[in-house]
Every structure is written in structure tokens, then in C-alpha cells.
Image (tube, rainbow, N blue to C red; front, side, top):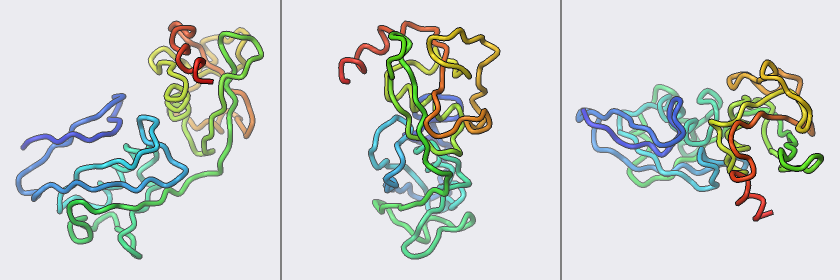
Length: 208
């Protein structure tokens, strides 16, 4: 077997990952995902992403890839094939060919906003995060970092407000839903930053 690159966040990795490929899978196809308006890609961009598939790739596998590309749960993805739905067991080669566009829908929660205050100036709003109420803490952190330039590896999401003492036991688990911690539309979410916020926020603040 060989390997092909997937332009998506891998399992526990911040960048592109590899997919194993076999000769018997058939000739590879490059397909283009048509991004729903409300979604951003894994890297924070609003681009329609290309991905590689094989004729025998199933609808279930395509849902996983699209979930990786756009940071959503695979089970929430519905792949459209014309007016029909690509079922989990369907082979994609029966519905698509090389170069085709793949449209999809994501069933999700209601839209909500979280407020993030500046770690540099007390009482100064850093940004607002437009999320869904079915997002995990990890997804919120990824979005915050993609917008501001802060580094995920230096950030612990925490229950509390910026400018107030936040203990490490207030840390929010990345796999938990934000609403499980009582967050609702318009609430402030805090974080502990172990890097240099002034340096990491410099480019973002210059753009504001």
C-alpha cells in the first residue's frame, strides 16, 4: 500500500494527515467539497476544500473526511448526490467521478455567540466567537486560536472571567460540550494562557 495526503486536521494533529491507499481501491479521484455557508474549514479558512477518494470509498468514510475538513462530527454530516443522499454503505464511485463537487449538509445545534475578553487589557473585548450549541470546548479553542493567532498548545480553556484569578482545576475538558458547563448565548468564556499573549496577539490586534 501507499499513502495519500488529506488536507484536514488528523487525529490529535493540527495539520494534514495521511490515508492508506491500496491498488485494489481503484484510480484515485479528486473531489471538491462545497462548504455550507455557516462552516469554516479546519484551518480557519472559508475555502471549499479538495479531498481524495477512491471508487470503493463509502459514504460513511466520506462523512468522516468531511467532518475532519470542517471540524464537525461525522454522524452529523449528510452527503448529497444530486437530489438523493449518499448512504453510509454506498460506494462513492457509483455517484461521483473525478473532479466532481460534493455538496453536504450538517445537522447541528442552534447558533450562539461567546465573548472572549482580552488578556492584556482589563475590560477590553478581544473577540466574539460564533459557534453552535453542540460544539465541544476543543472546537471553541481551535476557532479562538485560528481567529486571534493564539496558540492552542499554550491555552487551557477555563470557567471564569479574564482578569479574575482562575485556578487550574477550573479547566474545561476539550471533549465536553460548552453547554454542559452552563454556557449560553452571550456568555464570556475564559482561558489560561501559558505563552506570550502580547507577542501572539500582535498581528491580530494590528488588524482590528
